[in-house]
Image 1 (cartoon, rainbow, N blue to C red):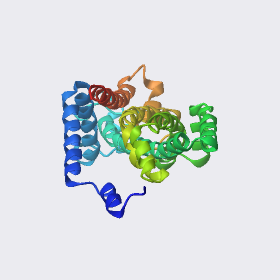
Image 2: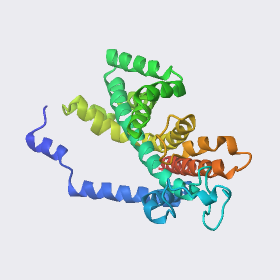
Image 3: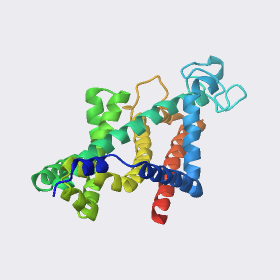
Image 4: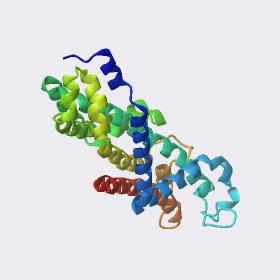
Length: 299
């Protein structure tokens, strides 16, 4: 029997009690993050770099591209340059702080884009099945069959290196992986009782996919997003090292390693400082993912 208007309205509009329960659930999850040591350390590292990126114009002692000709002969750390300077006399600390800005924008944006596209494809393939599943699966296989570094080089060499092009190429190459994850989760969740109940109420396929299935798959997806943000930070550094990352002279952690590659035996700190920045931020996101997985297992 189709639902009456009153019943449909009750189903569509959550009650105040349900809203309060959801709010309490979110507060419990936030408290659980604080109870997890890996998650707490990961959040602290991420917040540190976010604060440094946001306050770079204030805390950076020099402009990122300002050169100190007097420091060319003394590139090691000193009172004037706490982390030393690079081969052009630019302050490493300032370039590290300013270089955190594009990394913390490009990597999460690419993850959000890849997750949105991957969820659309994975939900459609897993819930609808049939020819839609076949087309989506084969398209993902084709994209994943290419060596990613070569694919990055071809696309960025053709379209040019810019922040938006890097976001686009990361989105397109990571979306098939997320689509496979979402497809597998959807194949399992579409057989659950609440999905059957939604079908019996006469809900549309879009409603079932985005209201019934996707929220119940958010746990693995959030953990994957944290891990994938760390992977994207590594990829951005690799692209900069290969010379196809952010265009110079703006600071790019991978580009900073590339610029000083030939001088590592003489002045190793020039490469070690940006490498340490990349590693710490990646470790922060990985620890957050580990903590979220522990919280999920406890729940």
